[in-house]
Length: 617
Image (cartoon, rainbow, N blue to C red; front, side, top):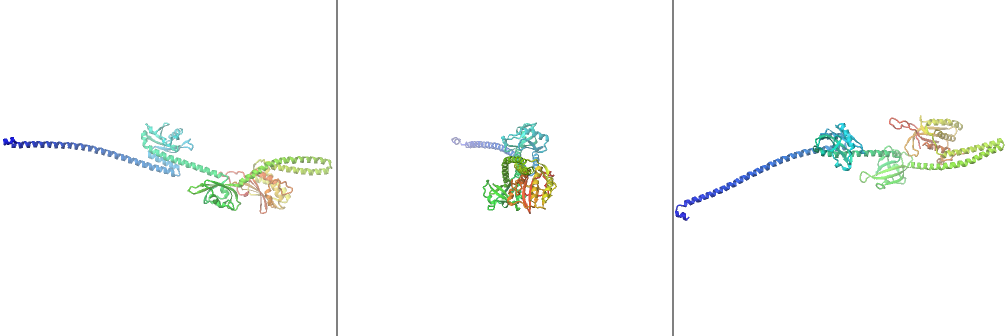
């Protein structure tokens, strides 16, 4: 300032200097601002490029994601289509009554869905030893035969578990895992396994370049395998159940005991053949369980008695069966078991009906056999004891006949000899009764046997003042008999009838065919030959009927009491029955014998015996 002041003219220079300094300062500031703006511009361009890169990457990622979503949508559609198809396959296999048609539909859908050349289903037998084609679609027979041969020798090990069974390629007789294949293959084996059991397999004929290409169909085939294995196992179980049911039904139908099942309301759901015969109905629904099966006059109805049986327990009681036809009640034993029903709280009862007549008949037969054995021993001893003195008596009589007058001695000797002979015949008859019957049975026509016996008895009929009348109700009656012994029975019965019949009466001999029961009286009605000898005599007293066939019982002073006993033994030995009956003032001795089998008809069954008599016991 001093210099400016001193010079007096430097103020303008100072102002210029200050202005210059200010301009430089402003210029520096401008350069700084411009530099800052340039930096910002460069940063902005860098950020724009980075943002563009990010936008481009996002667009690329978005496009990729869109592609993935498209692929996922296609895969989902494919899976939905698979599920729909699998549902239809499972439904058709489960509901279709014709399994052949259901399997054909399964193979057709598999072929179309996979784009395969052909498909086949191979199943193993129940024992698992044999493999066979169950259904084949468009696969050459040679390929199917090769698969059966190779797979039949390579049975899968159930110990692996069904999830571990690999799908294998079949090529040139060799099995290899599909997933490990590096070469093309055209046959895929899809094993069917259910609960460790090898059921068989599916054979898919489709070309794959390697295991990677096969992976596209893998999960579909896994699901198919599960569905088909379940249905095959279910079908086999149903088949086995039906087989067991048929076996059970056949077994129940063959039982000699009646089987009836009913619920707590008395509704009968099942009755086997024997039960229907005992109750004389044709259908289980016709059975009135309370009315036809009675425990006794003072006992509760069957349903009330069964209500006291604990669940899954059984009880036994004697009862009587009524047919509802006003016939005599049949004594039976009931074994009743209770089982849980299909609905909770429901109870089913299984009633086994044992015909006590059969048991009683067997017991009577056992007692008869025991008596027969004892009688045979006694008869042998008795015959020896009787014949020994008889021989001595006869010998002494011969000696006496020689010491007295010839005429008188001979007369006494003849009487003694006749009586000894009579006693000897009695001994022979007793021995004959005591010994077991020895039969020589041959096919015979009962009509011819009876005609022959009637001819032999015509003289005896004339002497008794009676008429023998032959009544034939059939053209032929085939039986298997010992003709000699059976003719003895006929002659004995005819002689008894002629002796009992009043003079000028008719003794009828009737022959026919009809139905017979088994000897026990509890068997099914079977074809039989019926022979009846009928007279109009007074018959047998009521108190003597039970002793008619007992040895040595007789109502005639001159009788031995062995004729009917021997006749009954011979008839029983032929598998028949001999019964006495009094009907409408007539005495009837009825013989029922098994009829010989006749030739089978067109249906392979025995032809009806035809019109004839009804055997009543």
